[in-house]
Image (cartoon, rainbow, N blue to C red; front, side, top):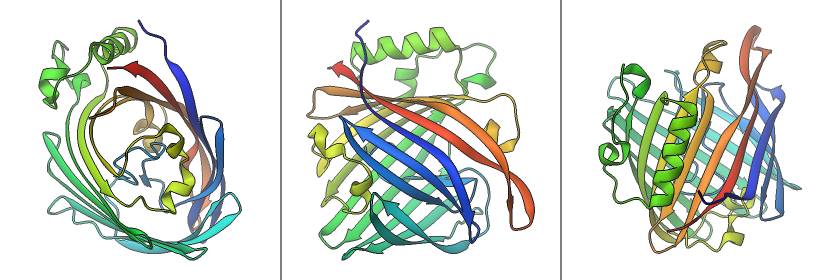
Length: 292
């Protein structure tokens, strides 16, 4: 089996709570280029997915039914500070989400709208993200399909046929089969098709120096496979996190990328007079898997 080449990593650790907003120290490194970030999180069960700048960018993950809210915080990237405002307006009755993120600072402004329809989950989830900013517009679309093999007594499914998102190189099949053999049945499997086009959002991409990889993110299509192994012990927040393995494939690019996530830990802090358990640490590693 072809060796993995590690080309980047992301590590995060809880720092503080301020005005009921959680803050994390984030360090990102891709091909030797580093960023240090003070990242706001607005609820322990709500966060956007830091996939090191790969599409779909700034996709949110809503882990629990939450009430609508609007909050403000400060995002710091190296020495630059940005005002950040998040407006969360879910529609759990119709199984849709809407989140607006506004970032301003250093003569830049970024307005991001995210919509997700999960009314047919897990067979089909559809999402859209639109960045409007000083330099133009960037938008993406994605479709997800998932299953939970851990609910079945036997796991004999051909996940590539089941996920129905196209042909996969043998190197990806080999890696997926290796993970299944080593780790057993995943708790969750997702396939995601995405396409993205436009002017890259400047504030978002200050966080992720993915430009060094020379990917054409301004006009791209691709697929992603995700295998998730969730924690079996701990509290509610622990059991919805765990280890994830994500494979990225782009049309018109012969390279394959792989993200391994883990290093999860949690801790208890006081939020608004109550003791709650939150994410404490997390880590992601980026690898170049090989060529198609």
